[in-house]
Image 1 (tube, rainbow, N blue to C red):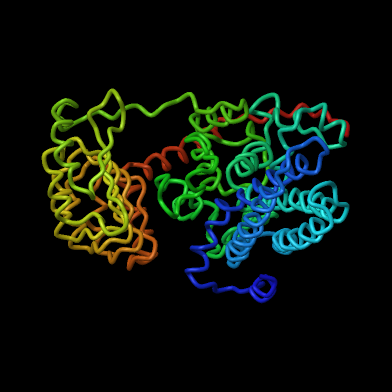
Image 2 (cartoon, rainbow, N blue to C red):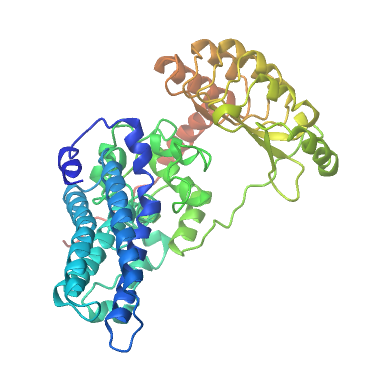
Length: 506
């Protein structure tokens, strides 16, 4: 085990199987902790004068402790192979964790030696070693919690009197935020706290997955491995926003499922901030901010879980089946193992369809089986599936479709032509498909399309920029900009200079 810890340090390209096994470390590490605790209690009872004679039970627990401690330590070493953590803290956790497992075997030796002299009672070498191992285990556990959840994870919610007693800085006042949104600094008081709540535990000084750190403005601007985490002025091209909009169970979603998630309002704030140039400083009151984003900032500063403004249910242009009618069809469709259908809201007959991963991946045949409820489908998540251009013919018969996920499928330009009649489509993910610039000629006529993801496709940057320009012209934004410039000129002409001739004192 020591050789494994020594010679795997610094390996950059770890085999896939080692990473698979390493991910069992968080699940198994609690076993040695629990066994050590049980062992301490049993040894206390066994060594007391009036206690029960349970030496055999102590021996059994100690033997199993040694086994599970080694397994947990080895899995922890494998988990650390890809890196992405604070190197100093990771090295200490690796070696102390290995020592805590090795100590279990020395405890077996010491216990056998002690019991060869006396069948029960207190043994200074053995019980002292057991106490030292328990203390070591506390340090190892604290370091592990820091690596996983960030520094201060175990202490940040201590009551204020205890923090004051042990000399910790009490940040309660700082967490309350500024008195008003107008006086808040856009990065320090709004953007950074969002990162702190949802991102820094995996992208901070103790753990920096993907070589990305978000614990300071300068580091956030450097980005991660791809370097395009935050692209000032272009939120749609920023990987940060792309990952925030993925479904919660998507492997590329950040933060991943099970981690603290930003609210819709906080995501809207991040989108606005990046689109506005990702400024490092500036008071909210001095910036031009849409009212919806400003409301989200107020909710964030007040600690509200949700923004008060909720998205209204869109008007349904094509009649849907009632929920009672749709439910009967859904029961029959869901007999297929690769179709999962969810109702999007209790007061709506609209549904979301999702295809699973693995051997039962979604395919063209599964798409054809959705025909009875085609009008009720507003979200279709079939990324990473076996769907082809031919299968997208069934999607053309889903007039109320608003979100379509086709990432990493076999779709090409020919399949995209089936989408030209989806007038309500506002989100389309084509990441990793074989579409080219020709696909944009079809998509440009979709009136409500607001988010289009074409990473790792054959679509050129120039074609994407032309597509954006055409969409802006279609919405009339260019005309609005010209009107704004004309109004600015009128305001400038209307200003009056009044000179009193009185010099002001410096």
